Image 1 (tube, rainbow, N blue to C red):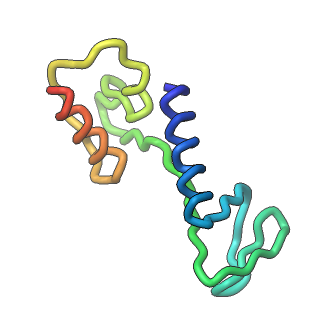
Image 2: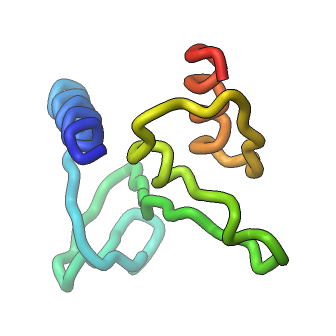
Length: 104
């Protein structure tokens, strides 16, 4: 899992550099429509993208503990015969496509 994440991150970093995108990590808040404060540093730009990341949301319903999350997929040693994917976010959609390609 970590190796996959490292490769993906490296790929994104390379794409950012090739396209002139500066990646700045930290706590951010908008000061005005073209200025953000990141860890106290003011940054101005014509276009600003805030990418907050994502984490699985496990529903508070009976039986939820019997399922798993998108994080668990990367720890699998074998693919299941079938799977039900709940969620309409991009991670669920991407995992559904990948698992379908693998015949799940």
